[in-house]
Length: 323
Image (cartoon, rainbow, N blue to C red):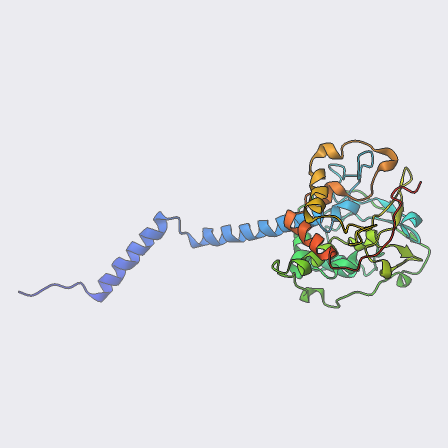
């Protein structure tokens, strides 16, 4: 008796039909999957940018309106990115400058800027029209950030609601060239974020991204006093109060040498509760934006602590409230 065998072609057709049926039953639309993957990726980038802009690099610290009727001046809701805060000789500025409007408003904001132009301003301090930004904007530090982190911030900034706030032009008493600082990297796009397995190196990266040095290192005639790196002593006169930045080197007598990692972390976690900063402490206020830094990831805070333990201890007594 002869046997009937299905031809190879028929078998292939049956396999294809079965596979297609399996894919359709399991939601296997490749177009939908790709779209979902891309959307998830974009969401993660924006979330990273949000985290950096609000809790690490603190773009929203200077480029929003701060409410110093509350401890540490948390940003006022609804002012995110609108700019307008002024900075003068009380912050070692030779004249007066204003934080720019970085919302996507096309007239008074940066709505017409390309992503690369925004990234260049963040890392090189050069605006769309080629002007150099005053280095109170900590682009010398942002210059050391990875390309991924910089463009995550750019992606997040794009999502901020447009605000038509018109910011005044700066008025400097010196040529901008005299204030332009040397940058660590001529090609920021080649920077990389250290692996978290090297906690000290990663902590140094995060601390640089947070520009901690700019407040915790004293200045003399517009220049940082590097032998007192992170030793505090920089005074901030905000009119209603004067406060001096603390020594955060590992010096046991005048710094944080006796602080444990848990103590360091707890100092930040304290201000995750709005009740801790929702009152006006008068002259005992702080320019340190605790309410923003407080929500930095626990691991990142611990990494910064680990890095700080490696820098030279400097004996530098600080009078926190000199006036």
